[in-house]
Length: 173
Image (cartoon, rainbow, N blue to C red; front, side):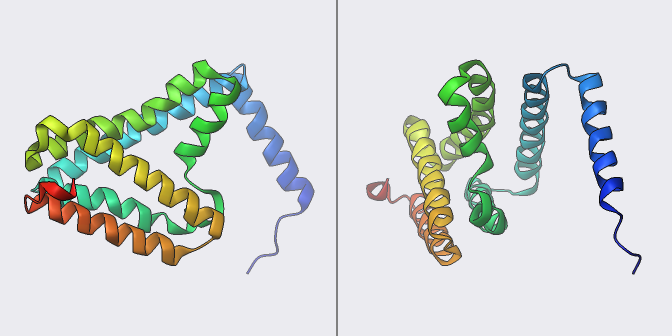
């Protein structure tokens, strides 16, 4: 393999990237706004793809849960990027936090549609918030304890809960 690039080369490249970004974005807030907008658009595209790929709402809800296992390594290291971003911005940058909230709202609207199609239109928003809150709690605790087994078990528990809903077991809701 080729030798690693010298530190000076990396440092120059990094500075070049920073200078380039400030050419397009005058402030760090503008960079963050663009990143939030980009991520929100990517999430919307992903959800549209899932809607077209998976036939039933229960299949789509299970695909949503797969985010937990598909992101396990990153969750163990960093926690949930959307949750962390919203928490940090909510402390002192409420305007930017309002934009970052859209990352959750895109999922929220889509999940409400899934629960409605599953037969829970009257409670779809409540079930959506429950699922999202439990997912965020799982992310936090798995990260805090660095426990991928916990994440896996809790994802399975949520999957079982969704299956019960799909079978019409309203008591579990």
